[in-house]
Length: 128
Image (tube, rainbow, N blue to C red):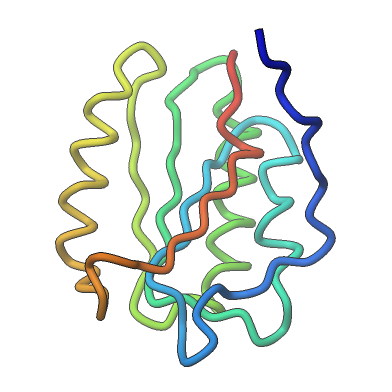
């Protein structure tokens, strides 16, 4: 059985597309402060056309999630040139969130469908 390589902490987040803004940045507003990590490490010149923030509905942590969602929207507002989408879904039913993401992707219209520039910050996709 292969062992997974240890994860590497990203010190700063740079855009993937050297000729313009990335197509999409995806993250998740969770109850934990670490969900802000990716957005807070974006370089000054990082730009993306769209950002998508997942929100996993969890009543026990609503206040913390709402605060982190507000912070993410604020941070990504200066980095997202064409818009920010928020996807709300149930923890036990993430398929609806993926369906919403597919609809958003159709609006993104990347220049190159075969090689889009997408960054996913997994730090906020927690298991509650």
